[in-house]
Image 1: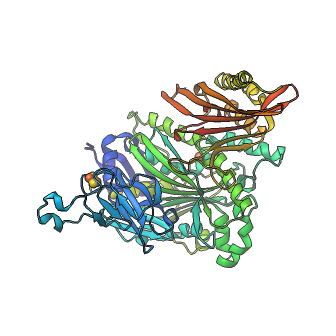
Image 2 (image 1 turned 90 degrees about the vertical axis):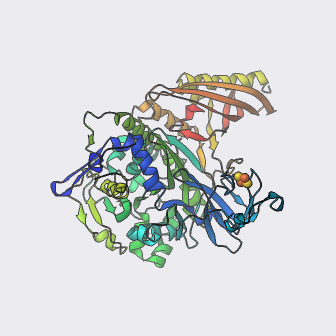
Length: 448
Length: 164
Ligand code: FES
Ligand SMILES: [Fe+2]
């Protein structure tokens, strides 16, 4: 049990330019337990994409916090989301990651449910000597108290007391539009999912996705190899988007990107890539400009690392990755990752996207392991309380402005705060958005 | 001469020895210049991906130069995940000669790689199947292709090329 106060965990004094986070937030088991209840099990959580259950009776399984979830498309084509636990004695009903089933039969005592979660049979019901009152109870799979779709992105909540999904996403929805609008027929997950774990707190992943400051120091081996491939020019290597960007060049001048923060803990860290042939999207450059205008097209080509609090990240940088963060313990996190791509791109573009993805994003690639090992190094360091306050939430303090800037105006997006950055700034104020939302959600169970 | 089972085993064991002992140049030297190195990802509980151009792999490289990049990275001192290296011992069993003639051969085997990362205290065993495509170049048999089907594909933090 955590008996401290919020002010022991987050030191937020905007007037003095101070924002600090305590190490305890990452390794206290009591804090973790409250996070599961207040953040993962009573608010909007990303479940998956509609295309994972494309046809009638298609389904996939996932989790909200510790709770198993079934997302199923019924015979009429409507999507539903259910607690994947049998009303009889609690067994998980659907057993596989995905599939197609008109009928889900519980493996324990064979109660069955249709693809809309309705109970279809209680085995040997008549011989069961049930009281009449038994029939008054619903034997259906319980639907999630809240379930919503935004442009193919599916979210659910175990608590009905949540704002409408549109309100939760707010202006950050326009960043999901940038993903959804890349293909005329929407987007999909490339076949082949990669799951990995790291022995560190889930919020390290949340932070790292938005961390512009770490790239050149954590990933020099990756950067050097891309440079070597460029000069070797063997024709075997796949083009890299970093080649054409100043985003990570420490000697570059001028605006290289920046950050946007939104209410409810969503953030974007972005950089200018330009409309470059190193991106698989290049073949669509003109068509996209025609369909959406040049400004929105250019945004699709920008590097974008988007976090939708608390568990969805879409990283479009070296390639395009959709990640789902699943906390397992204060110091253990599971990542489910996919290559996300517009439907209908050419075979050449798809191949390029996949190759770029594997080198950068995979736990068997040349970048992600340097991130995750760093999380584990942090987690070890968090044990200290000699000086509990961490200082890594301060870069960009005097650059952070309320509202948007000319770049967000281009897509008519109104963030709560924004930072325009050169290549050296490495904004950290965007993390504050995570922790302000975190504090807001935890306020009900942790005293001020 | 056609490759014998004994020859095939010797090549596999030599590769394992090179990986376990960080003899990276000797390891690269076992591969043909156009070698294909492939670890497919899994589509679901029972099927791996089968087409690297339309489906995801854990690693897919065509060309030994890509393997040389990976070797460069573990040597570079510029990758926190790579230094210090994870200790590894490859155990290779059930070696079968699937097909062999004068010029080429296919070898199937099973592996278990035991790993110990001193830094994190983590021990782990990756296990699965190898399929080696061997090709004669002059006097030597080289690895022209290696496909690794990793059965336990929930990856604890790091999976570098030498961990399989
Ligand atoms: S637990 Fe499902 S039928 Fe008994
Ligand atoms: Fe990184």
